[in-house]
Length: 95
Image (cartoon, rainbow, N blue to C red; front, top):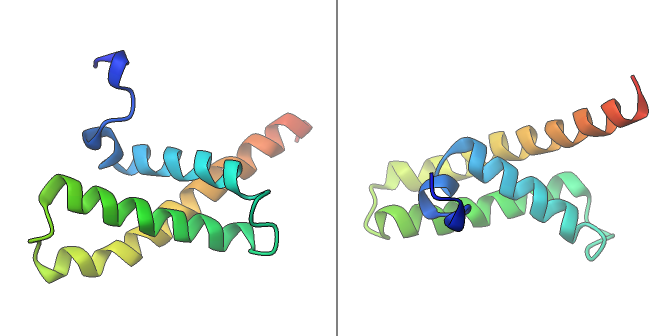
């Protein structure tokens, strides 16, 4: 792994990569969008990241089944990043 390119398309195309990036972007943007619930913000970010990553790694000429899975995968990514954040908060509080 080349540490000069920490966030590449190959890393972002993995579940762990997109979940980590979704979590980071959600925490950075949640104060900007205070009226929008954090879980919805996380889902929107996951959809955008997955659409961009799918287009960048396979092009826009993907079968419709690939594009149909993007919203479902975004839900899983959003839940994973929200759960990881809650686990960190719970650990910092000591219980």
